[in-house]
Image 1 (cartoon, chains in turn orange, blue):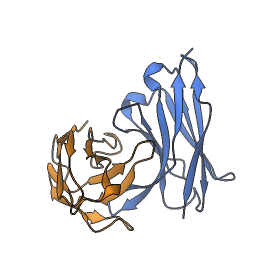
Image 2 (image 1 turned 60 degrees about the vertical axis):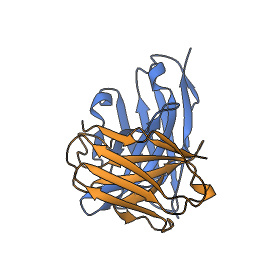
Image 3 (image 1 turned 135 degrees about the vertical axis):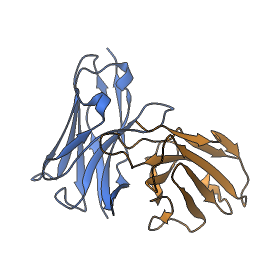
Image 4 (image 1 turned 90 degrees about the vertical axis):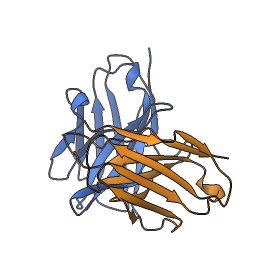
Length: 109
Length: 121
């Protein structure tokens, strides 16, 4: 099972800030990396897939980059609705290895 | 726009069987998508449980494989989850999700709102 880690585990930011979240895979996963946003009491929402492809309908202030083991989610000009928890997810070692999620990064004020 | 709605008992006794239904609307379970179940224990990261394709093909998380079954009913356009021999560790919000293929990868693009299942006597 490929382990996923994220840093930081939480961060405080202000509206208008640029925020960067890092995700690391325990072994190379090419670009099989997705990013989700989750708000309290809600289901995860897909933001980015294949490491850098923006899901339809997601604001362009969200962007993703990386390949192999190190990945980054960037939020430019943080908006009030962006305060949430962000998870990365690998889809490389599937199905046997499962779609493993990272531990999450909570972005709050 | 496809919508998914989970339903089922909110309380299951230890050693019992957890049974949930995911009703799909605005789309067909026979489309070119996989259908997954994902759970999330309180304060924890999401955990993938398994998936099914309309052909009947299934894949399960290895650590849960001996206790889980995912089924699909084309006539009612529903997906089902059964998890046997439950313990308190199975207490979680359970989500169903549609999974589309993106090249050779899979993308969880639509989710239900989730249903909380508590395992307790």
